[in-house]
Image (tube, rainbow, N blue to C red; front, side, top):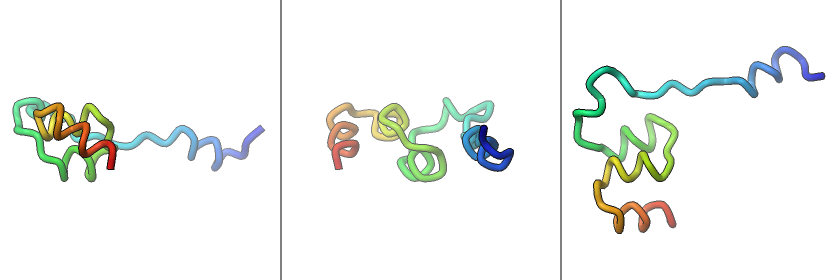
Length: 59
């Protein structure tokens, strides 16, 4: 079994900036990929362009 501290580190939840009106804001790569945990969907929201998203995610 894991110690309580190790178990809590596995279960750690990262806060997301998904407040009430976040979906109405234009994407911002800093907010989407540095303040939040970045993934392809977050990058796509920021770029709103599939080619730029693929280019960014393959860096």
